[in-house]
Amino acid sequence: MAFPKSRDEADQSRPFWRRWRGNRAERPEGTTPRVTPEFSLERFHQRVSWAIGGFLVLVIVAVLAAGYKDKFWDPPRAEAGSVRGVSFSMGDLVQRIRVVQGITGSANLTTLPFEYLQRLLHAEILRQDAEALNINVTEDIVDDAIHRQHDPNIRPGQITDPGQLEEEYRNNLQIYLDRTGLSPNEYKGIVKETLQRQVRYFQLGSEIEDTMNQVEVEWIRLDIASGATPTEVVARLQNESFASVARSVGVSSGYAEESGYVGWVPRQAFKDIGALLFGDEILGQKPLSVGATSQPLFTIDGIYIVHKLSEPENRPISDVMRFRLNGQMLEDWEQERLRVGASEGWVEMTFNDDLYQWVADQLALSAPRSSSSLDQSGNQPAQR
Image (cartoon, rainbow, N blue to C red; front, side, top):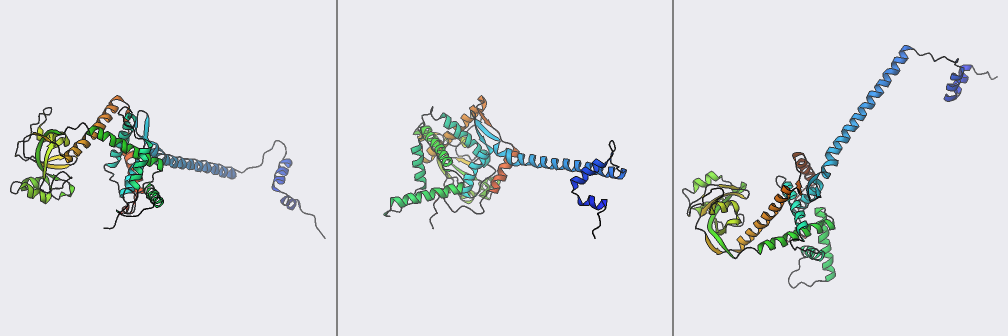
């Protein structure tokens, strides 16, 4: 025999929303449910806890978002420099340095960030000045230069197939692009900048006269790898010949022989040394006497101890000194244009410690684990 359900059992069997609505319907009009003080205080504490927890979550999210923005979003988009409204970001700067990093397997962070920022500005200034300077580097010239850079090496007498050579060229080019992280268009842009700079180099070189005032010198150049201090070298020169000391501690940068002999040097080829050899009326500096040896001269290129061998003479300039003088003329022109642009307000440069640290961090992340085994053309180096 089935017994009728009690009221409590019947209520429990009904869905929740019906029980809730039923309780409200059964509640006398104008009354509220009975709530104990303990229950009310507990609900208050819960709501306060939820509010505090929600606030803390929002604070954490805001801090993380701000940190992400400051560390990852803002730096690559921050302006590093601009020329007449054409801007370069910190991301552009990192990309250029990574090209060097990809080729050499390393990047000197003490100088490269500053050097490459200036190179970006120099390249843009020259690009904008190209028409006025009659510099016209076409796409065909760029493509031809890239071909010559990455064409496979052909040994004399080797039988070649044009189709195979083209395939090897494309393979070499792709290896180089993968190594540097450049797209084909980005690489073309860099090659075009390089070619424009070369044209400007030769334009300035055409102004160099065949003969000019020069002084015969020899010097000892020191750097970190020399293993001797300037004071020690000066002391040794009191008792030893210049040539023997030069052979012992000198580090040539390509202009001096092992004995330290350089030859005839024009004034503007080495500015600091030129002022020492020829004097500087503006600074009130007298020239070094013939036969005298200078005190250590600290320059960007190294530390020089110079021995002057002759008075200035008008002589034919050597190929080595013409090359040096030509490069110096190009650097002087670039720096002068940069100075003029900064003074007139159409060149701007932005770089601070925080952005420098960001550049260093990015390059550390992308540093190769080992030195590159490829040369600049993308070819495997020959076994020796």
